Length: 90
Image (cartoon, rainbow, N blue to C red; front, side, top):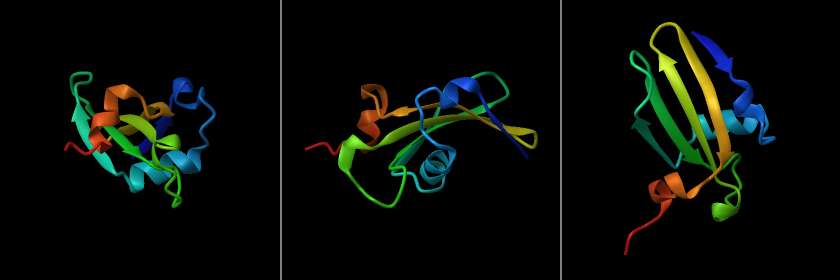
């Protein structure tokens, strides 16, 4: 399957090995609404094996067209939009 990186995925300066670490070792992931015919998923996690809490968590969003491509189009420090995925409720 082809892996695509959009320009917007690299605009925050996160290097590719860190992105792959989050995808392969997420603390949380969730399928979200995307384009028809694609499966869109957000991955939340740390960019490496060192856990610094929220200070280093990333959110990575990918679109997958089964059998054709896997496009990484959003990479950013964890925002409030997806923080609930890793926040414990009392």
